[in-house]
Length: 230
Image 1 (tube, rainbow, N blue to C red):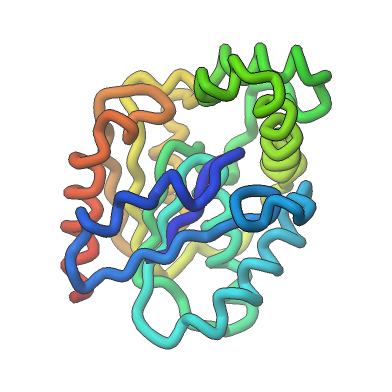
Image 2: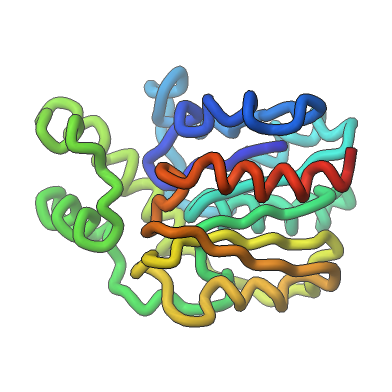
């Protein structure tokens, strides 16, 4: 299972997941530039270069059955990576696992965040998502390192333009929080039109980062899907 992190996040956010997945499942976490061991590299600010780089890195590893999981920004990146693999006639995932992201054809009703000045950006980020840890918010040096990465990731999301293509031939399972106020009615359900195969949706108690408190429940739900391919 290739896992795509959300905006501002690194591989560390999924590090505990593998022990809760079926033993036969190997967890491979996408680590983007600008964070963790790639801190000195410039983060991407546009979707297409990011997708191209991920596809180039993944192709040599697609020699066994695989699935994609992505939360929020990671869900959108995973979706575009699948479509790029299809264009290149590369192996396709058995399943696409989507979390906390509106369907890609639906417009974002909110104004863009990435052009804001840093103080306004941080304030609005917390109002919408509440995703910046207190330890970072309370440490100016850490916040100064974190905000440019987060802004770059939001630039990837907010400058992305959806182009219509045929639906995917892999099933899609969608997960979300019942109190995720970033999403509107029908945002998650809209993913149904992007697959010609099975579609399911499941919601858990919580907000945009519902899985921080519902990790066991989410991983159990995904494990049921994964076991169908073992």
